[in-house]
Length: 130
Figure 1 (tube, helix red, strand yellow):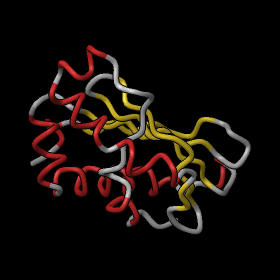
Figure 2 (cartoon, one colour):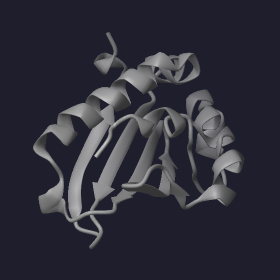
Figure 3 (spheres, one colour):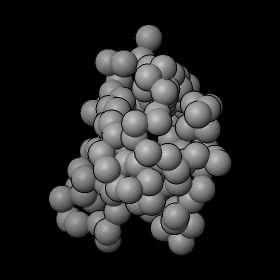
Figure 4 (spheres, one colour):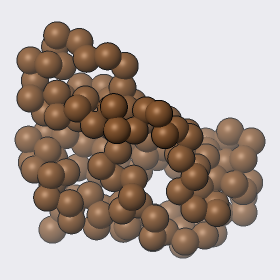
């Protein structure tokens, strides 16, 4: 499995209509502003192994749910480390995303396998950036 596709997913955020608490928080509002650009596109096939099924914004956190087109026991052990490195590199490398993270935003990526079994969750915060 390749771990190079995340650059296209990092800025994507989806949530239900903004609440007054979210609009009062500029970081939550910035995340919510990206919703319209993504909602109609889901699900998004990221690569031959991965599909983005949903994205949810909860306050300052964007939660991505991916499904891998394989069984969890077939995910190579090295994939976990490589995927986390790619997600961190891409999030930290996008100035708008990095600025949001400096203000408290975080990104959570949850992966399930072809049978919807939990595989891993990777979290990216500003403290992960170098």
